[in-house]
Length: 117
Image 1: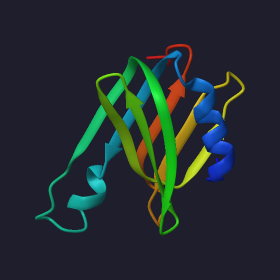
Image 2: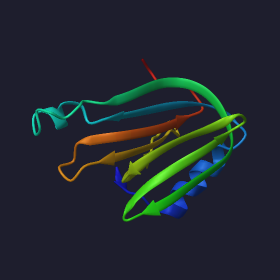
Image 3: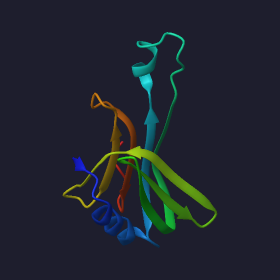
Image 4: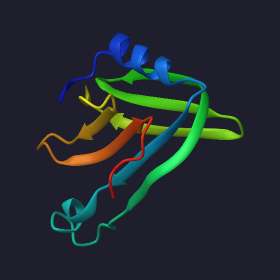
């Protein structure tokens, strides 16, 4: 993965507009929080292979981290805290947010084919 380049990521997002695609979205602070602060709550969300069609997509920067919003017909999907990206050989767009120690905090992945289970 490499640091996000807004214009390149936006071009990739635009390629998926009005197509049926599969999303993988996850967030976590997992064990990262509770071992530092025993009163911290572990939180996370995980969805894999949600089939969606979005009509608009936008990436914006906020203090060197990024947010991607996908406008669905009846709502929104967004991921915040993204830092890195890559397009795989299979054409999947993978976006991730890592903390200062390199641990995964958020992932948003888009593909025209389902992701493996």
